[in-house]
Image 1 (cartoon, rainbow over the protein chains, first blue to last red):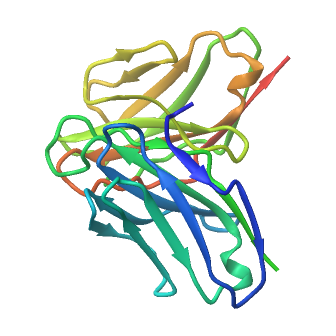
Image 2 (spheres, rainbow over the protein chains, first blue to last red):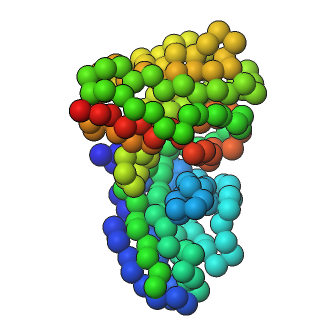
Image 3 (cartoon, each protein chain N blue to C red):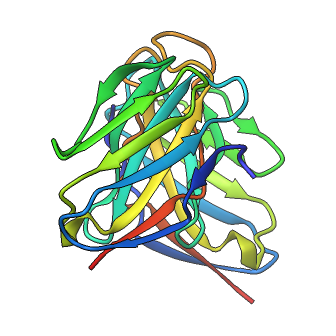
Length: 117
Length: 111
């Protein structure tokens, strides 16, 4: 158990809908990262938040957005869903995630499996 | 981050040591080698990391060559539960914090 929790575990929805995925980082971790894993793309970084602020962006679509709340949990919002958005979505957390700090190992949650029909 | 090359798949007999190689010939001086594994669609699990010295923890050992252009992850006594995809990632401590996962090595531990 990494200490990172994600809800829900599974989500089935229809094209055009909007869903929200939730992540609670490990106690004490300030950074949250979101990754997408689809069959044809492998694990891809989407976005990082540090202490409530966006820190880095990867291959995140404009239809997707995220935020990190004062209690440090994070939500990933996926809208106008398409069949191709079906994937596993992982959240990871690390202590700080800022440049030149000692501990930046990321610990991953169990993921949310999204199926868009 | 430097690119890594790993074999697509490997088999290992249960109870034997599993040696997973990784080439990172373009690694630079401040880049660390990280290993993660993913067991059947579970979240990636951190295993170990190192800079230039060999490292060992309760899960595995990491051997980095003197020129740092390659490394080997060693699982000393592989069990069936070690069957997973193993990812070798080279990261710059001072750069972006996201992880770049390649295709990894699918390790199958055989009874």
